[in-house]
Image (cartoon, rainbow, N blue to C red; front, side):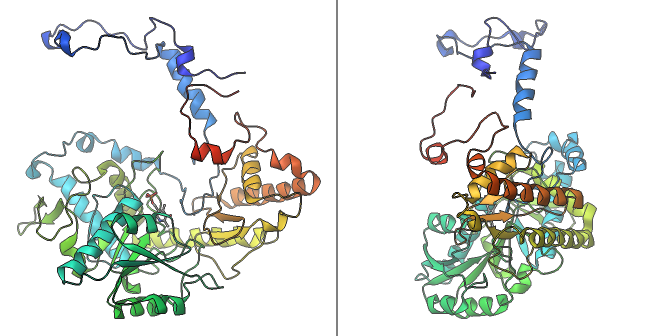
Length: 484
Ligand SMILES: *Cc1c(COP(=O)(O)O)cnc(C)c1O
């Protein structure tokens, strides 16, 4: 059946609401005619019931964490606990105006203060800010703080940021947007930073190193202290991409590893929803010597125990967003952190690592495993061993998984692994779900052997079949037309 768009379903004169006429003069006010649009806007018109069905049907076409296993590596698609939603809906929070005077919003300000204290303790940092609304946004603030630090010392020749070739794409993008040249550090055969290559790149031009540990291959670097010592000796700073803290919470702290500034993705590790590009929350944390450069507004405890916002600070990199970030998101993260406590977060980390290693071991019978040591919260396997079977690629396997009601893992990232699948189960999945995933992967491998062409045309059961990925990415055409 052809699915109709909301425009095709529209019938002139239908309305999704009807309200009695208001008695208040203000509600019946009409703006002066010169401000009114002459032509009617071509908006769809529908009854409330048809509208509700339209969006409920669309919702069912989607794959989400609430409906499907979602092992999308580096994205930490864990349960979003419903108790978080209860807290975020409390009217004391939802009805606050961002410009309300400080003395009327003491609870909100204390929440920001207590959340940052909790995160600083978890990460071994001294101060922070919640104003940044995504991981990449936090990176941008943090790298600007590195620039401001060097500038404040008159150290103006530091124009380079070093970034490993396994890094998330946002790292080089951030460094370039902040005006730095990016220099790529090679990964060694164990999946770690090639420390000799790193040493050869360090100089008086090094502003800093951006690093993820565990990295995007799911591996923790045992040489992290040698790395941080080398960068500091050269006068550079260390930026920690803490998007994925899931493996190390309350086990290892970025501050103790020698990192100077970092961000966290609360919409990954701290269980708040990810959605269609936002809203998220990517707080930044830093060591003491970088605190003066944190963005504004900042929340400060006064001598009498009250809280106030500081809107200006001489050395600050300035404002990164309007007001103080996505309050309702980090409120959810605060509740998650408090309900678990530091000990509970350690258990989260342990279970995330256990689940990942369980899957890695089982899938190593089906795929090439480029790095054989224990993994952290995620791991990579390669589908290159099926290239010979009718040219089956990681993409084909990812598409076939959708037919089985499983969201695809991250594919072709990190870029340094051929036919890569980056798999992250998270701690909230049961052993039954993991076993089901392993069974499905086994079935797909059987199917590849029997009929590779069938796999190449997957998905077969979804409303949209195989699409041309390159055109979809490079020539997006926004259209109102439904698919067949
Ligand atoms: C997700 C992720 C980011 C970017 O976070 P956004 O919130 O999507 O901007 C950066 N680095 C790593 C390692 C990530 O996994």
